[in-house]
Length: 261
Image (cartoon, rainbow, N blue to C red; front, side, top):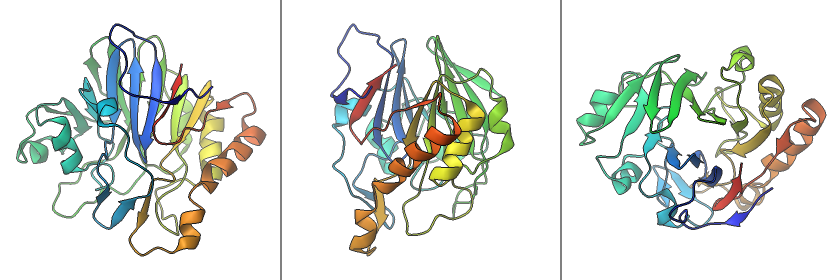
């Protein structure tokens, strides 16, 4: 069930929910704890421009922690992190902490795959992801996915290609946030298209799958035909999941929409 556009969570409530803010930026709210993934809150970054309206700033404000999956500009945007505040707690791949501290961020904690950190009542566990780790001028820090666990567990895959280890996630996710596309006319290595994303869901077997990393950004100068196809990946993802993992519920959110868990 998709519950529509949202503003900030009302004070005093602790309903579990997911809010999709676009691209790989998702607010995970479990047991009253707010965790924000790969925040990209501006209208553009490097050669990419946002194609859908920005989500109300209050939705992303004051997270208890920010998870960074890897250092690529569309996942680690320094301008967006500064909007959240340089003292916001960051959980980042091992190797990135000192680099962020030199840029003024005061609370960057590192994890490697298999390691965990507490965020309020939740446990955040880093898991492997298969993706290119390079960013010019930045250290090499291996990409990660994350399991965010309380009474329920949400898997944020980050940016990754399909790999067999997805079947072995522990604890087993109730919800999987799965990247299904990219931002250009072609999808390079280290990513999943809708079919690969459905294969990932087949391996993971969550109760709910939510497609992310689609329909938000496009490179400057990319033609109208591509813009018109921005909404195609989730349709294909739904079709593939229905064939490969029919017991899994797919909830497609557009930027600014939430779903309760």
